[in-house]
Amino acid sequence: MFAPRDPDEYLLDTERRVIRIRRHWAVLLWDTFEAVALLAVCVLVSYLLPPAAWVIQNILWYAALLVILRFAYVVMEWWVERLVVTDKRFVMTTGVYTTKVLMMPITKVTDLTYERSAWGRMMGYGTMVVESAGQIQALNRIDYLPKPEEFYDTISELVFGDKQKQAERFSMIKAQRAARGKKKVG
Image (cartoon, rainbow, N blue to C red; front, top):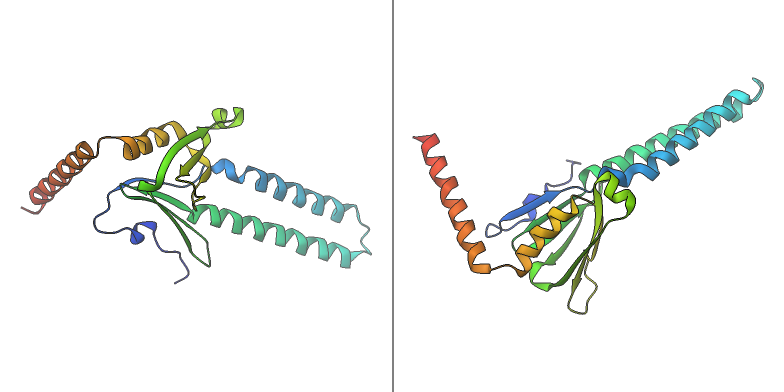
């Protein structure tokens, strides 16, 4: 009931899923640092206060609980956010309570760039900048993308590769899956 829909449910029957990922866990580093620091401050101040200041101690413990709940929500948001790339479009779903679906057709892509900072190279993430014909699209900048080289190569093949070869490869994969499915049934 409260679980967000699977991103694959938004795909058409004629689409072939190429990539399905969530953003790199490094997106949570600042929120983790912030939560740990705020919890440490709450605990430290609570223990330094005299026992007579029990009202302030209680307020600090409730503040610590709010910090934990906020961090849990941030982690849930990261967990449910998915980026799906098909042979026809980019689809990103976000949101824990209110689902937001961002979409951009592959045919609108005119240029791809990926950037990696020193931290990104060490931890394995990067940023993909997807440009379209004179418009800012919903998915023009995707930060904390895991394995950006592989993503870049795959998207480049989809956008700028030979469409006939892709269609032939897709039909061969479909035929192989169908053949395997018949063997399992029979």
